[in-house]
Length: 109
Image 1 (tube, helix red, strand yellow):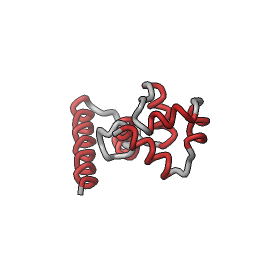
Image 2 (image 1 turned 90 degrees about the horizontal axis):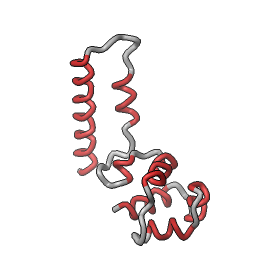
Image 3 (image 1 turned 60 degrees about the vertical axis):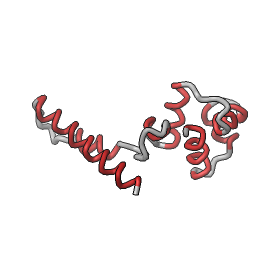
Image 4 (image 1 turned 90 degrees about the vertical axis):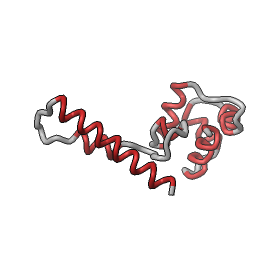
């Protein structure tokens, strides 16, 4: 649930609702409403929240338990200046998805 994710991330980061609100340019009451499941942040605010906590939007929206895909993206993007064919790029994408699924399965255990 989005409300619980925001609260959990905020608390783990040692931030008060007011401090998070200041960082986002909103009121403390707005953060309290999000955490109390009485309102939801708009899309641009979700992006800001995910950037502050260095998590993916998928994680923030409870679509995955993988907090951040940066490592996977870096591995797939690193190619030492070589040119990749379309087929090879598709294979890299399949591998990235495979690694994501393995991580999700591991997180569920």
